[in-house]
Amino acid sequence: MDLEAFLKEWHNDSPTVLVHTSGSTGKPKPMLVEKRRMEASARITCGFLGLKAGDSALLCMSLDYIAGKMMVVRAQTCGLRLITVAPSGHPLETVAEPVDFAAMVPMQVYNSLQVPEERERLKAIKHLIIGGGAIDESMAQELKTFPNAVWSTYGMTETLSHIALRRLSGPETSEWYVPFEGVSLSSTDEGCLVIDAPAVHDGPLITNDIAELSDKGFRILGRKDNVICSGGIKIQMEEVERLLHPYLTVPFMISKRPDEKFGEQVVLLTESMDIEDVKSVCQRVLPKYWQPRCYLHVDALPMTETGKPARYQAQQLCMNH
Image 1 (cartoon, rainbow, N blue to C red):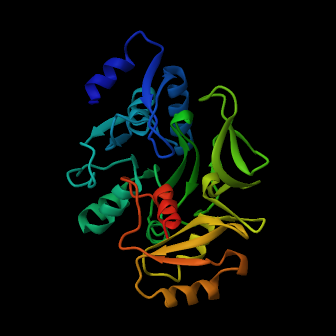
Image 2 (image 1 turned 45 degrees about the horizontal axis):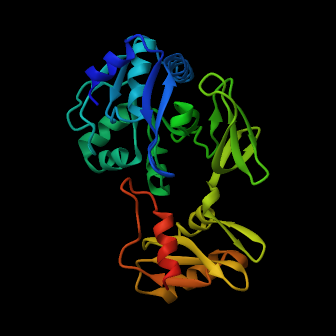
Image 3 (image 1 turned 135 degrees about the vertical axis):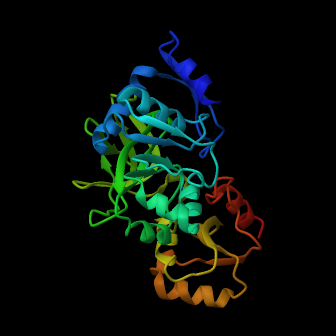
């Protein structure tokens, strides 16, 4: 969809807009969302970041999904001046003018960091929000030194992009997401985050994200589907990976497979040829119950098109060994 077509849809008489979910947790599905809720979301974000009429906003994401559409809605609702570039891996390649506000996916940020000129432009953005995928540790370390505000977003299509932000730059850097005003949070018996955000969504929304709640906000530990139940102990794949990342330089991921005795067992897939070396790191770093019972060498780790671990394919690989 191009900008003209979306603006036409935005200004027509219908109270709703058609959006599609991203498909990261299943097949993309169409959804009709109310324009008044999109406007409410836009006001909340702009208010939180202190953006004002006349500030420049960079649209560098596809208008097929909520993240792109919401950038346009923020500009329309709050009087921001929209700078548009075609969605690409290098959104700052041709943008020479100052940018007050931009939203990107981690891949766009990663690519921009690799090119000195683009890196300087990225640093100069007053408010950069990053969503649509995990931000790895080395990128987080690099963004920490940025002079302006960089944020990681938490949300989904159903919440009309984000309902919480986590600071990635400067002294306020934190692993805790701060929910917007009017958003209340709770968790299910399984520990999944439940969002109640009446301004943008009707009724509570139960997510698949296992979260820890505190007075600081919330921290995402991983997805419900990525829990391994081994001998009565629940192990979160992402938590195991987080512990190992500082010590393993080779590409790896944690998966699982059925086990007669324990129900499920932890499996580590790695592109490393030196399995013994990987094993000794795991034995040194991980709690006893989290240690993999099986190590698999693969030529390439299964990944999704957007660069996230393809967990289902990984489990299929584990089952076949």
